Amino acid sequence: RPEPGKLVTVRMAPSSHKLHRDLPPTELWTYNGSYPGPTIEARTGQAIDIAWANALPTNHFLPVDHNICGAEADKPIVRAITHLHGAKVPRKDDGYPEDWYVPGKSRRHHYPNAQDAATLWYHDHAMGINRLNMYAGLMGLYLLRDEHELSLGLPSGDFELPLVIADRWLRQDGRLYYPDSGDAKAPWVPEVFGNLTLVNGAILPRADVKARRYRLRVLNAANGRFYHLRFKDGRPFQVIGSDQGLLAAPATMRSIFLAPGERADIVVDFASLRGGSAELMNDAVPLMRFAVGQGEAKDDSRVPDALREITRFTEASATKTRDMTMDEYSDCVATPMLMLLNGKRWHEPVTETVKLGSTEMWNLVNLTEDTHPIHLHLVRFQILDRRPYDVDEYLEKKTIRYVGPAQKPPAHEQGWKDVVQVYPGMVTRIIATFDGYEGRYAWHCHLAEHEANEMMRPFEVV
Ligand code: C2O
Ligand code: CU
Ligand code: CU
Image 1 (spheres, rainbow, N blue to C red):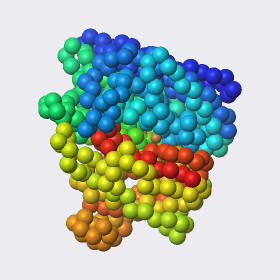
Image 2 (cartoon, rainbow, N blue to C red):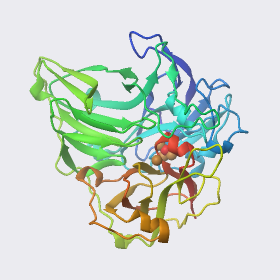
Image 3 (cartoon, protein in one colour):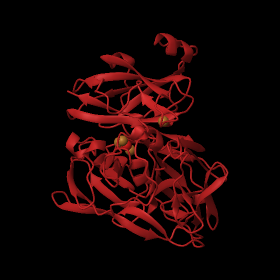
């Protein structure tokens, strides 16, 4: 809980962690020696300053191949820059991928916290290497609270639990394994999946809880895995918030599908389970156990029917509409395939110049066969709809012809977002007001391996 006006230093350094009782300790790269990094709590309207000190060694302990086609090959291997995901901050404080710095250096970021309460998170964003830095452990939560949210009476204090979920491949000797393609010239792999999942840095952890309501702040911090979360007994839970804070009203669900980078704010009630337990699952795989106490638990928390006022954008509020494509492309000898946005690589000149304060609709046109979790820096957005279209016709004529009805986002996606699942075969329309700050920011796929392989582009607010 950094005090406003006081500079807090957070140090990135290697540390050793016992992740599994049967395995030797694992070397991770962490913020302040903990994985996930320390949960930072801040208040809306109270700016804080953090110095992110890079105390990492000069060699990476994971295999390094930089960006595909060697765009980053002449750069120092170990470099870092911390991005506060979901925060509206000046460009110099954003953690722009090219603002990285080397071990021994530190960088001070100012966080105005001039935005609504939300489950934010921080992670490494250094150009060409952040998939390894994140995988090595450089991430943590940043909970922004505001008066309105605090007045609602939601479960709080001991009854609010952060759940940072991410998979890792652990070898028998306890070391972290990061896969490559087996082709020395093109070691990049399009997706990385682990052999086990860590929740808050532990395999299948157990939480001792009381027979009452809990608020779970869930973050999918994986490089590439999507999580289909549910309780083993099928118990319903209330989704009260998404990436950018509270929904207008709670949505009752029995499972939720989270892409890398997405957050879900959930309230679950263990009152009926006195002396028993609940299990959080990813499909059929248990992730975490909640052992529920015998005693009766006092619970004066509540989940109001109206959580927050959210005015939904209409498409008419956009003054500009852009088609933005997700493409796969192969041309380079060293590359099996490139993942591109708008057919362009990161280093090509900016093509999206957005007027400060204007509202734009982006048609996210997925020309690939994968779902891409697309994330925008600086702004929060709303999902208007998703709609099937003719992919081949688009490839040929660059025009969208819809072939089915538009689908409104489900209730839990009707709030403010900063990551959206862009399905194949569909155009996903999002709408945002680009206010706050001028400058060059990034938008990208949050599958870390896609992002590293060119699925990231700048946009410029002027
Ligand atoms: Cu969570 Cu550009 O990042
Ligand atoms: Cu971000
Ligand atoms: Cu992607």
